[in-house]
Length: 338
Ligand SMILES: Nc1nc2c(ncn2[C@@H]2O[C@H](COP(=O)(O)OP(=O)(O)OP(=O)(O)O)[C@@H](O)[C@H]2O)c(=O)[nH]1
Ligand SMILES: [Mg+2]
Image (cartoon, rainbow, N blue to C red):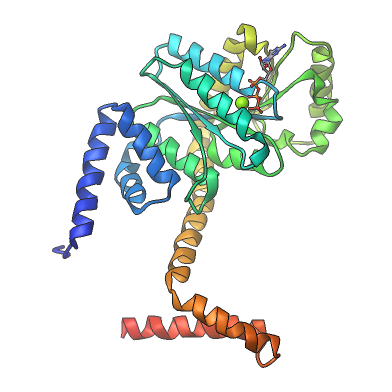
């Protein structure tokens, strides 16, 4: 066991240990720093995640997704307030969409949400992908592990439902609430957009506006008619809210609770579902490590430059070239092993 540590490793170990202790003590600045470390994808961040892992697995991750402006942040704030009244420690992670166009609004969001928080048991953070090779989604997952280890009972994760991101929320959260508004259009459009499948519960927000009832009826009908999730034991409930006034928020929270209880109930569904997600996560993490390992070999860049002229002159094909790179790695590996 007496593995020689380099000075740098020993120092990193000491830093990880110190940070982990401060986290366990509920030190908010340690939580913020730890999340920045995973956002930046630093080795220190990985060391910390490794150390904290045994303390994870207990909290519920509740994902809130939906189209831009549907009231996700308002709803998340209202949910958090309700949970705080019940005495829970709550963390909110708001995932910044990568689109540069929404930067201003998001910043506004972050400021507004932070200003609302003077409560040490309500942690609010906007996520950015920064240096994390796994992107914002992975950084957010890792942040949620840090928050669990810091003793937060419930982690609310807000993501904007555009393009692929609804699918990512499924990987991040145990329970996904899909927020729709009367203006979202009819249920057929919602189904066509392929976002219904992610929902463990529907929240029709802005129910104070025209058309809410119609959307509820259409959703109900669409679910009855389609064979979608037939055989699945869970039928996603449809909740209606006016998030700005806190109306229906309690009921939406209760629905999320029922889903989590359903997962935790018989047949160890939660364990199974989390294992499936972990399998995908392990592949992703391994890809990340392999890629980083491969590109750290500085000679690759030189070889790449040198190959360009030969490839242009048709002396060698791109396909042969990558095979050769692969073979040279193998030889290096064997030399190191031998
Ligand atoms: N009438 C009405 N307005 C609401 C309701 N909930 C939220 N809003 C308003 O809708 C606007 C958008 O709310 P946000 O909570 O920022 O929506 P969001 O989905 O987080 O928006 P993005 O994060 O930008 O996608 C704000 O002006 C809210 O005050 C509601 O139930 N009824
Ligand atoms: Mg928002």
